[in-house]
Image (cartoon, rainbow, N blue to C red):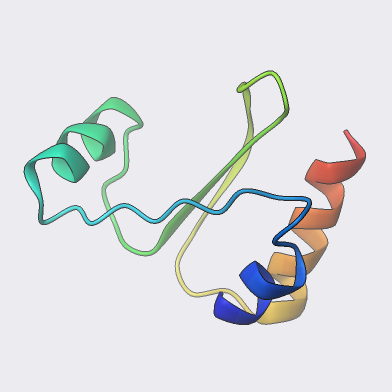
Length: 71
């Protein structure tokens, strides 16, 4: 993820949530996150467009970032 964050830092916002902290736990509940890692993609209108669970290869994550940017 660090490489993706660096590559897309001017185009895409990455937010990490620590589910062991009270605020992170609250956000996880609000978004129905039950496992880690979990990735939720939002469009520019802050609407969820897709989600993925589990470790993902870099190329799969990059494709999802690109897809989100195109929407």
